[in-house]
Length: 241
Ligand SMILES: C[S@@+](CC[C@H](N)C(=O)[O-])C[C@H]1O[C@@H](n2cnc3c(N)ncnc32)[C@H](O)[C@@H]1O
Image 1 (cartoon, rainbow, N blue to C red):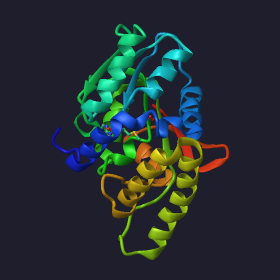
Image 2 (image 1 turned 120 degrees about the horizontal axis):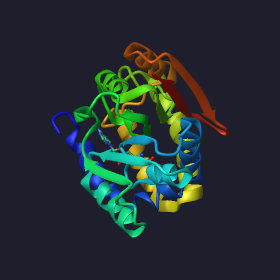
Image 3 (image 1 turned 180 degrees about the horizontal axis):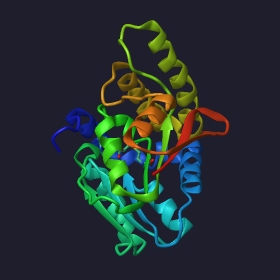
Image 4 (image 1 turned 90 degrees about the horizontal axis):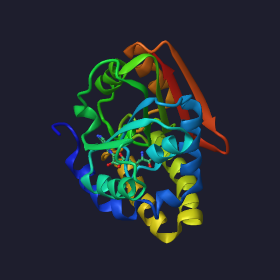
């Protein structure tokens, strides 16, 4: 775990116990995960890597769709502890293998996975280019990289007022949803999270044109973007090797 931001890891460690009761209660989040599963084109017996799996919401949706095998990694041991309990409760130990690993330190064999997916996880990675290059290498030919992410460019100077307004516009929509669907606990967590977006503290969102460029530079041939209906800040990108 050389490169992962330690403060950010601590933040997720602390959030883990309330994750399913906060973001996990926001319908928009589930719609995003459902769209990722749908657009991934998953087939029976696919080998899947879920990067930044958290409490396993995305992995479980993949398995709910069809029989597949999942490797799930996350830098937070607390998130994984909660996911592991679900795996054991649902008798899925043969199907899902979890490991504490940061995206920056992944070390898988080339041409191993049919699908590599990540939902609202990779924007936490500050230096994205080497990670996307690794993703490309770990995919089989024809394999797909699928991300569900926030479409917001937060690069640039913290003092740039246009940057600040962009983030505040996103937060306004996000906080209204959090309060409406997740209640006060979700609102407080997302409000706290908003400051991290503004200060570039473990949150390094980029726009989808930037994600597309990273994918093309890594070698992906086909890159397609689909917006999440009704939630313009969120999109799904599918890049095919
Ligand atoms: C917002 S949660 C998303 C969890 C899950 N993918 C979902 O959609 O519900 C972000 C997750 O990414 C993990 N994470 C943050 N930085 C990471 C990194 N550098 N490598 C791997 N996981 C990371 C966090 O621990 C957290 O579990």
